[in-house]
Image (cartoon, rainbow, N blue to C red; front, top):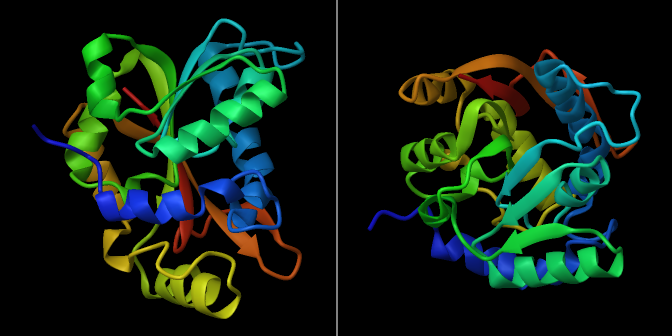
Length: 242
């Protein structure tokens, strides 16, 4: 049976799973990125489904699947916005951390230690699927995307963020982030697994989907903050529709 799981990647994340909710730990870049990506995702969802952004829980009627949810950094705020959230991850330790944190904060999130291809056997479809900083860590990328699209409801929407494969991304996302600034543990990323935007577009076309919108994400190491940019050379975030 085909699998999207890369065992070495899971081992690497298991080693630092306890750090998920430490804003100054190994996942500090994700904590600083979270408000911006949440803003982008929320805005696009509201536009796509014609929702009232002024409501306290504008996503109340939507089901959201976070693939490779880690410790739940996106699951929890999506739940607070009213969505019915399911988070899946191939790492048991990640799911254990996510469950514990959600319970401590009295949040209802359905966490499962599984993969997107195994989830298909439950025949559950979702309005929104989140793929954030995960595709560069899986095997069989085409199969991974196919499985995600098969889990999406007709008229649904998917978000995918990852890192471009350029010289600039090698210098900034690997040399700079891992070896110089130590923002991430050394070995977190493999440059050859990064996907260029045009490659992503070609892959999703196979499933009759398209990139409806794409934006770059730029990190300022001095301010430790992120902003949206037209520059896709390093990090980028795509909104994908049928």
